[in-house]
Image 1 (cartoon, rainbow, N blue to C red):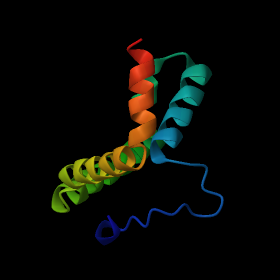
Image 2 (cartoon, one colour):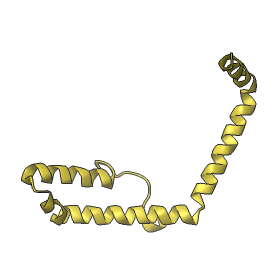
Image 3 (cartoon, rainbow, N blue to C red):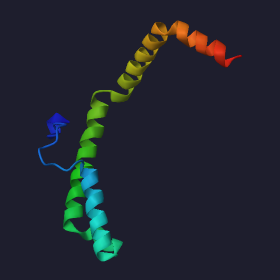
Image 4 (tube, one colour):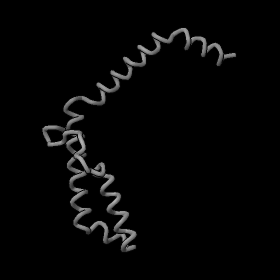
Length: 100
């Protein structure tokens, strides 16, 4: 993501995610005109949607490049195994209680 210019940090005064900006702008336009077809033609909406697609594409490519999903699953599996090992007696007690 950094290679594509995304630092993961918000700029001061930034109201939020691009998707939030797009939704807010669309809501304002819809309530202003009551014509949803005008919203998609609004240059500000088109620009924000383009930025959102570029960020989503960079995020997808980054996740693929770093094997995000398999690493995430492996990490959670390790954490779950650690938790079970640390809390084995409590879990066994809970299981006995549930089976009564």
